[in-house]
Amino acid sequence: MDISKAIIPAAGLGTRFLPFTKSVPKEMLPLLNKPAIQCIVEEGIKSDVKNFVIITSKNKQAIANHLDMDAELEQLLKERNKNTLLEALNRIHREAQFTYIRQPEPLGLGHAIWTARHSIGKEYFGILLPDDIITSPANPGLLQLIRIARQERASVLAIQEVPAECVSSYGIVKIKKQITPKLFQIADLVEKPLAKDAPSNLAVIGRYVLSHKIFSALEEATPYAVGELQLTDAISTMIKNNEKVFAYKIQGIRYDIGTPIGWLKANIGMALQDPTYTVHLKNFLADLDSPDSFMFESSKIFEHLK
Ligand code: G1P
Image (cartoon, rainbow, N blue to C red; front, side, top):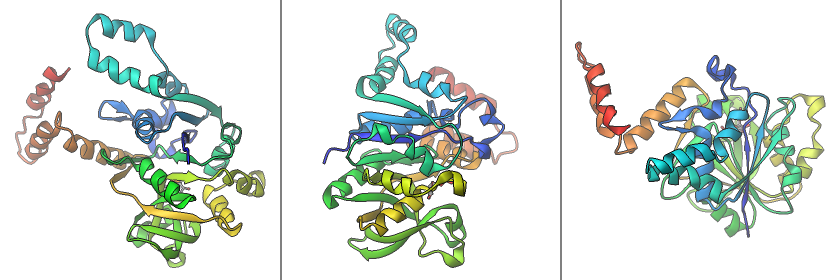
Protein backbone atom coordinates (compact mmCIF):
# COMPACT_ATOMS: atom_id res chain seq x y z
CA MET A 1 0.00 0.00 0.00
CA ASP A 2 1.65 3.19 -1.22
CA ILE A 3 1.06 6.17 1.11
CA SER A 4 3.02 9.05 -0.35
CA LYS A 5 0.78 12.09 0.14
CA ALA A 6 -0.11 14.10 3.20
CA ILE A 7 -2.38 17.05 3.82
CA ILE A 8 -1.26 19.75 6.25
CA PRO A 9 -4.17 22.00 7.23
CA ALA A 10 -2.52 25.35 7.97
CA ALA A 11 -5.35 27.79 7.38
CA GLY A 12 -6.32 28.38 11.03
CA LEU A 13 -6.34 31.92 12.36
CA GLY A 14 -4.28 31.07 15.44
CA THR A 15 -6.48 33.09 17.79
CA ARG A 16 -5.02 31.27 20.82
CA PHE A 17 -1.69 32.86 19.92
CA LEU A 18 -2.72 36.47 19.29
CA PRO A 19 -1.22 39.05 18.97
CA PHE A 20 1.74 37.09 17.46
CA THR A 21 -0.52 35.55 14.81
CA LYS A 22 -1.86 38.92 13.63
CA SER A 23 0.80 39.09 10.93
CA VAL A 24 2.82 35.86 11.25
CA PRO A 25 1.30 32.41 10.64
CA LYS A 26 1.35 30.25 13.79
CA GLU A 27 3.00 27.53 11.69
CA MET A 28 6.07 29.79 11.58
CA LEU A 29 6.52 29.73 15.36
CA PRO A 30 10.05 28.53 16.04
CA LEU A 31 10.87 25.26 17.72
CA LEU A 32 14.45 26.03 18.63
CA ASN A 33 15.77 27.22 15.25
CA LYS A 34 13.11 25.74 12.96
CA PRO A 35 9.60 26.92 12.18
CA ALA A 36 6.97 24.41 13.25
CA ILE A 37 5.95 23.82 9.61
CA GLN A 38 9.44 22.54 8.86
CA CYS A 39 9.31 20.08 11.78
CA ILE A 40 5.96 18.83 10.47
CA VAL A 41 7.23 18.44 6.89
CA GLU A 42 10.37 16.67 8.14
CA GLU A 43 8.23 14.19 10.07
CA GLY A 44 6.35 13.56 6.82
CA ILE A 45 9.53 13.12 4.79
CA LYS A 46 10.91 10.67 7.38
CA SER A 47 7.62 8.79 7.00
CA ASP A 48 8.23 8.49 3.20
CA VAL A 49 5.72 11.15 2.21
CA LYS A 50 6.73 12.79 -1.07
CA ASN A 51 3.82 15.13 -1.78
CA PHE A 52 2.40 17.61 0.69
CA VAL A 53 -0.85 19.44 0.15
CA ILE A 54 -0.84 22.50 2.37
CA ILE A 55 -4.14 24.23 3.06
CA THR A 56 -3.53 27.91 3.68
CA SER A 57 -5.45 31.16 3.97
CA LYS A 58 -4.64 34.82 3.55
CA ASN A 59 -1.49 36.15 5.27
CA LYS A 60 0.17 32.72 5.16
CA GLN A 61 2.65 33.36 2.33
CA ALA A 62 5.56 32.93 4.76
CA ILE A 63 4.89 29.18 4.79
CA ALA A 64 5.38 28.77 1.03
CA ASN A 65 8.36 31.13 1.11
CA HIS A 66 10.01 29.07 3.81
CA LEU A 67 9.50 25.74 2.04
CA ASP A 68 10.57 27.11 -1.35
CA MET A 69 14.11 27.16 -2.70
CA ASP A 70 16.04 30.37 -1.99
CA ALA A 71 18.77 30.43 -4.65
CA GLU A 72 20.39 33.59 -3.32
CA LEU A 73 20.69 32.28 0.23
CA GLU A 74 21.97 28.93 -1.02
CA GLN A 75 24.65 30.64 -3.10
CA LEU A 76 25.70 32.72 -0.10
CA LEU A 77 25.97 29.65 2.15
CA LYS A 78 27.99 27.83 -0.56
CA GLU A 79 30.41 30.73 -0.80
CA ARG A 80 30.83 30.75 2.97
CA ASN A 81 31.27 26.94 3.16
CA LYS A 82 28.29 26.55 5.45
CA ASN A 83 27.65 23.05 4.15
CA THR A 84 25.67 21.72 7.09
CA LEU A 85 23.24 24.62 6.91
CA LEU A 86 23.03 24.23 3.14
CA GLU A 87 22.32 20.51 3.37
CA ALA A 88 19.49 21.13 5.87
CA LEU A 89 17.93 23.77 3.58
CA ASN A 90 18.24 21.61 0.47
CA ARG A 91 16.76 18.48 1.94
CA ILE A 92 13.17 19.71 1.94
CA HIS A 93 12.84 20.77 -1.68
CA ARG A 94 14.97 17.86 -2.91
CA GLU A 95 12.79 15.30 -1.22
CA ALA A 96 9.29 16.71 -1.37
CA GLN A 97 6.80 18.54 -3.56
CA PHE A 98 4.26 21.03 -2.32
CA THR A 99 0.81 22.00 -3.51
CA TYR A 100 -0.95 24.94 -1.89
CA ILE A 101 -4.72 25.28 -1.67
CA ARG A 102 -6.47 28.31 -0.24
CA GLN A 103 -9.35 27.69 2.12
CA PRO A 104 -11.52 30.72 1.41
CA GLU A 105 -13.38 30.71 4.74
CA PRO A 106 -12.58 29.15 8.14
CA LEU A 107 -15.22 26.41 7.96
CA GLY A 108 -13.45 23.82 10.10
CA LEU A 109 -10.91 21.03 9.81
CA GLY A 110 -13.24 18.79 7.79
CA HIS A 111 -13.79 21.52 5.23
CA ALA A 112 -10.03 22.22 5.03
CA ILE A 113 -9.39 18.54 4.22
CA TRP A 114 -12.26 18.53 1.70
CA THR A 115 -10.64 21.37 -0.26
CA ALA A 116 -7.74 18.96 -1.05
CA ARG A 117 -10.01 16.31 -2.61
CA HIS A 118 -8.75 16.87 -6.17
CA SER A 119 -5.13 16.38 -5.09
CA ILE A 120 -5.69 12.91 -3.66
CA GLY A 121 -6.51 9.88 -5.84
CA LYS A 122 -8.13 6.61 -4.82
CA GLU A 123 -5.49 6.04 -2.18
CA TYR A 124 -4.70 6.26 1.52
CA PHE A 125 -3.07 9.51 2.62
CA GLY A 126 -1.73 11.13 5.78
CA ILE A 127 -2.89 14.21 7.68
CA LEU A 128 -0.50 16.14 9.91
CA LEU A 129 -2.00 18.86 12.13
CA PRO A 130 0.75 21.42 12.68
CA ASP A 131 -0.42 22.39 16.19
CA ASP A 132 0.59 18.90 17.32
CA ILE A 133 4.33 18.35 17.44
CA ILE A 134 5.33 14.76 18.06
CA THR A 135 8.95 14.07 18.89
CA SER A 136 9.93 10.48 18.37
CA PRO A 137 13.23 10.60 16.48
CA ALA A 138 13.69 6.90 15.74
CA ASN A 139 10.07 6.30 14.83
CA PRO A 140 8.26 9.32 13.33
CA GLY A 141 4.63 9.69 14.42
CA LEU A 142 3.08 9.47 10.96
CA LEU A 143 5.22 6.47 10.00
CA GLN A 144 3.88 4.56 13.02
CA LEU A 145 0.36 5.07 11.65
CA ILE A 146 1.36 4.21 8.08
CA ARG A 147 2.69 0.84 9.28
CA ILE A 148 -0.61 0.08 11.01
CA ALA A 149 -2.63 1.25 7.98
CA ARG A 150 -0.63 -1.16 5.78
CA GLN A 151 -0.98 -4.01 8.26
CA GLU A 152 -4.76 -3.57 8.69
CA ARG A 153 -5.45 -2.17 5.21
CA ALA A 154 -7.59 0.49 6.84
CA SER A 155 -7.69 4.03 8.19
CA VAL A 156 -5.96 4.74 11.49
CA LEU A 157 -5.89 7.68 13.91
CA ALA A 158 -3.25 8.58 16.50
CA ILE A 159 -4.57 8.64 20.06
CA GLN A 160 -3.30 9.35 23.55
CA GLU A 161 -4.86 9.04 26.99
CA VAL A 162 -5.91 12.38 28.44
CA PRO A 163 -7.27 13.32 31.89
CA ALA A 164 -11.07 13.52 32.16
CA GLU A 165 -11.00 17.33 32.43
CA CYS A 166 -9.32 17.54 28.99
CA VAL A 167 -11.67 15.36 26.91
CA SER A 168 -13.73 18.39 25.88
CA SER A 169 -10.75 19.70 23.87
CA TYR A 170 -10.41 16.64 21.62
CA GLY A 171 -12.07 14.13 19.35
CA ILE A 172 -12.66 11.13 21.64
CA VAL A 173 -12.88 7.54 20.38
CA LYS A 174 -15.32 4.81 21.36
CA ILE A 175 -13.57 1.45 21.36
CA LYS A 176 -15.07 -1.51 19.52
CA LYS A 177 -12.26 -4.02 20.10
CA GLN A 178 -8.76 -3.93 21.61
CA ILE A 179 -6.33 -5.70 19.26
CA THR A 180 -3.01 -5.17 21.10
CA PRO A 181 -2.12 -2.98 24.12
CA LYS A 182 -1.70 -0.01 21.73
CA LEU A 183 -4.08 -0.82 18.88
CA PHE A 184 -7.86 -0.57 18.89
CA GLN A 185 -10.62 -0.89 16.34
CA ILE A 186 -13.06 1.93 16.97
CA ALA A 187 -16.85 1.88 16.98
CA ASP A 188 -17.27 5.66 16.73
CA LEU A 189 -15.77 8.97 17.72
CA VAL A 190 -17.19 12.21 19.03
CA GLU A 191 -15.81 15.73 18.75
CA LYS A 192 -15.11 17.56 22.02
CA PRO A 193 -17.67 15.86 24.30
CA LEU A 194 -18.40 16.93 27.86
CA ALA A 195 -16.52 14.74 30.36
CA LYS A 196 -19.78 13.07 31.42
CA ASP A 197 -20.64 12.11 27.82
CA ALA A 198 -17.16 10.99 26.69
CA PRO A 199 -17.03 7.37 25.48
CA SER A 200 -13.41 6.99 26.74
CA ASN A 201 -10.38 9.08 27.70
CA LEU A 202 -8.60 8.27 24.44
CA ALA A 203 -8.13 11.49 22.49
CA VAL A 204 -7.35 11.85 18.80
CA ILE A 205 -4.10 13.76 18.37
CA GLY A 206 -3.11 15.40 15.13
CA ARG A 207 -2.00 12.48 12.94
CA TYR A 208 -4.26 10.44 10.69
CA VAL A 209 -3.97 7.99 7.81
CA LEU A 210 -7.30 7.96 6.00
CA SER A 211 -8.90 6.21 3.06
CA HIS A 212 -9.93 8.48 0.18
CA LYS A 213 -13.49 7.48 1.15
CA ILE A 214 -13.30 10.31 3.70
CA PHE A 215 -14.07 12.73 0.84
CA SER A 216 -17.47 11.21 0.08
CA ALA A 217 -18.15 11.11 3.84
CA LEU A 218 -17.29 14.82 4.01
CA GLU A 219 -19.59 15.48 1.09
CA GLU A 220 -22.48 13.87 2.98
CA ALA A 221 -22.22 16.77 5.43
CA THR A 222 -23.19 20.32 4.52
CA PRO A 223 -20.69 22.76 6.02
CA TYR A 224 -22.54 25.93 5.09
CA ALA A 225 -25.69 24.76 6.84
CA VAL A 226 -24.05 23.65 10.10
CA GLY A 227 -21.18 26.12 10.42
CA GLU A 228 -17.93 24.20 10.87
CA LEU A 229 -17.47 20.83 9.19
CA GLN A 230 -15.68 18.46 11.56
CA LEU A 231 -13.30 15.79 10.31
CA THR A 232 -14.39 13.72 13.32
CA ASP A 233 -18.01 13.63 12.07
CA ALA A 234 -16.91 12.49 8.60
CA ILE A 235 -14.77 9.68 10.11
CA SER A 236 -17.82 8.66 12.13
CA THR A 237 -19.86 8.59 8.89
CA MET A 238 -17.18 6.41 7.29
CA ILE A 239 -17.50 3.89 10.14
CA LYS A 240 -21.30 3.89 9.74
CA ASN A 241 -20.69 3.10 6.04
CA ASN A 242 -18.84 -0.07 7.20
CA GLU A 243 -15.28 1.19 6.80
CA LYS A 244 -12.90 -0.18 9.43
CA VAL A 245 -11.11 2.54 11.40
CA PHE A 246 -8.34 1.87 13.92
CA ALA A 247 -6.77 4.00 16.65
CA TYR A 248 -3.15 3.61 17.69
CA LYS A 249 -1.37 4.94 20.79
CA ILE A 250 1.71 6.32 19.13
CA GLN A 251 5.06 6.46 20.87
CA GLY A 252 6.74 9.80 21.42
CA ILE A 253 6.18 13.06 23.22
CA ARG A 254 3.34 15.22 21.95
CA TYR A 255 3.16 18.97 22.42
CA ASP A 256 0.22 21.23 21.57
CA ILE A 257 1.98 24.35 20.33
CA GLY A 258 -1.26 26.21 19.60
CA THR A 259 -0.95 28.08 22.91
CA PRO A 260 2.00 30.02 24.37
CA ILE A 261 2.43 27.61 27.28
CA GLY A 262 2.34 24.54 25.00
CA TRP A 263 4.82 26.17 22.66
CA LEU A 264 7.11 27.04 25.59
CA LYS A 265 6.97 23.45 26.88
CA ALA A 266 7.81 22.18 23.38
CA ASN A 267 10.86 24.40 23.18
CA ILE A 268 12.07 23.45 26.64
CA GLY A 269 11.37 19.75 26.07
CA MET A 270 13.12 19.75 22.70
CA ALA A 271 16.08 21.78 23.99
CA LEU A 272 16.56 19.28 26.82
CA GLN A 273 16.79 16.50 24.21
CA ASP A 274 19.29 18.39 22.04
CA PRO A 275 22.94 18.21 23.12
CA THR A 276 23.55 21.69 21.67
CA TYR A 277 21.30 23.22 24.30
CA THR A 278 20.87 20.77 27.20
CA VAL A 279 23.70 21.92 29.46
CA HIS A 280 23.08 25.62 28.88
CA LEU A 281 19.37 25.28 29.51
CA LYS A 282 19.80 23.17 32.63
CA ASN A 283 22.27 25.69 34.05
CA PHE A 284 19.95 28.54 33.20
CA LEU A 285 16.97 26.84 34.87
CA ALA A 286 19.02 26.01 37.97
CA ASP A 287 20.24 29.62 38.09
CA LEU A 288 16.72 31.02 38.09
CA ASP A 289 16.35 30.06 41.76
CA SER A 290 19.34 32.07 42.84
CA PRO A 291 18.68 35.75 43.71
CA ASP A 292 21.67 37.02 41.72
CA SER A 293 21.27 34.83 38.68
CA PHE A 294 23.83 35.18 35.88
CA MET A 295 21.29 35.15 33.13
CA PHE A 296 23.14 37.64 30.98
CA GLU A 297 26.43 35.81 31.36
CA SER A 298 24.95 32.44 30.43
CA SER A 299 23.16 33.81 27.38
CA LYS A 300 26.58 34.89 26.11
CA ILE A 301 27.71 31.28 26.11
CA PHE A 302 25.54 30.86 23.01
CA GLU A 303 27.72 33.29 21.07
CA HIS A 304 30.05 30.48 19.97
CA LEU A 305 27.13 28.51 18.54
CA LYS A 306 26.32 31.12 15.92
C1 G1P B 1 -8.67 18.99 16.10
C2 G1P B 1 -9.68 17.85 15.89
C3 G1P B 1 -9.80 17.03 17.17
C4 G1P B 1 -8.45 16.54 17.61
C5 G1P B 1 -7.48 17.72 17.78
C6 G1P B 1 -6.07 17.22 18.05
O1 G1P B 1 -9.24 19.90 17.01
O2 G1P B 1 -10.92 18.39 15.50
O3 G1P B 1 -10.66 15.93 16.94
O4 G1P B 1 -8.57 15.83 18.82
O5 G1P B 1 -7.42 18.52 16.57
O6 G1P B 1 -5.19 18.27 18.32
P1 G1P B 1 -8.68 21.41 17.21
O7 G1P B 1 -7.58 21.30 18.22
O8 G1P B 1 -8.19 21.85 15.87
O9 G1P B 1 -9.84 22.19 17.71
